[in-house]
Image (cartoon, rainbow, N blue to C red):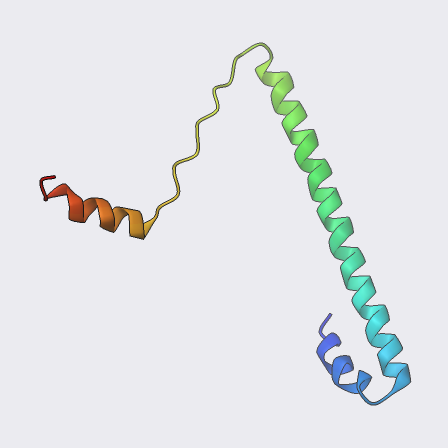
Length: 84
């Protein structure tokens, strides 16, 4: 992967380097996709094992916290002291 930037410069000048750059880039993309698929499979197996262990327990999902909004927080702070 470290060769990719160097081949990028060469690819602007030579046909061979352009083909090599494209091949290396395709290899990198393929490797990332394979790694991601394997990670997804491992995560799915881990979740399945956890579900087996937990069995009939009802798992309660926590709701995610509301995203912080500085503009809304500033507005509520300004209007908190004023009487309307």
